[in-house]
Image 1: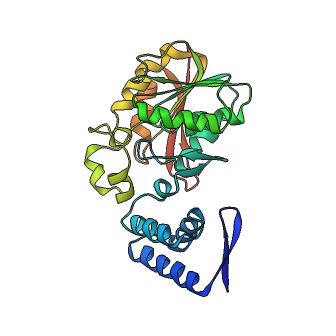
Image 2 (image 1 turned 180 degrees about the vertical axis):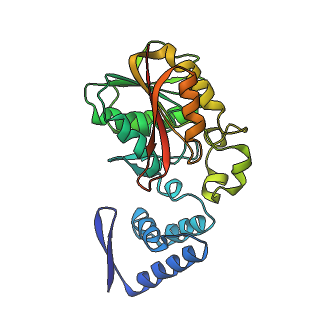
Amino acid sequence: MNGFFAGGRYWDLTADEAVSLDRARARLMAAGIADAGHESRLIWAHVAGDAARFAALVAQRAARAPLSHLLGYRDFYNHRFVVTPDVLDPRPDTESIVAAALDQPFATVLDLGTGSGCILLSLLAEMPQAKGVGVDISDAALAVAMQNRTALGLGQRAAFVRSDWFADVTGTFDLIISNPPYIAAAEMAALQPEVRLHEPHMALTDHADGLSCYRIITAGASAHLAQGGRLIVEIGHSQAADVSALFIAAGFADPIVIRDLDGRDRGVAGWWRG
């Protein structure tokens, strides 16, 4: 007999089921999936061993559909978030800007381009006295964010608003944070199929040089930041110098570069002088 732990329980497989799982692993490996064994086990647990559903989802994953779309969720910063094709797939790299935001206290936070709500809701879950607003131009993305808000029990502290960046934002905040579209148009073709073919392009790229959204954010943030408030943005690994320069030009003091667990540049943070 064979078995494994996944989905919060132990799965004790028959010999035929073990063969099916091994074939799925081999198929995913052949499709270029790096952790094929782990992913095949997660899919098995998700369908509770239903052979037909398992085969169907393995086929979709082999075609490079994102695992999160098949499972319907992604674990991010201590919580599980609903994920659909209408939002970016939360990534471990983004946890670095959440951690940086939590280095200092804040009472109010604005999340620009909130998507699934994973950044805003993760911050509020860690800061029980804080309140926040997440904005997005996509109604479908906001619907996903509201699902996640309900699941985490944050309905009294998190509001979601349809807005094109700051257009419909009112009030000031101690912290503004964003993971904006920063992939340059010329870089899109090189993205993995899971990203290029299945995630919303409006959340990935500005269809230009990758810096357009930072220009909007740095120019508009001062009108919505309290004195001494912080602006934190996620960046691409080669954008630290350009984004830091935009912070300085907009009047932010001493921007710092945030690095992820692999040591790559992942964010920029600055303080508003007021």
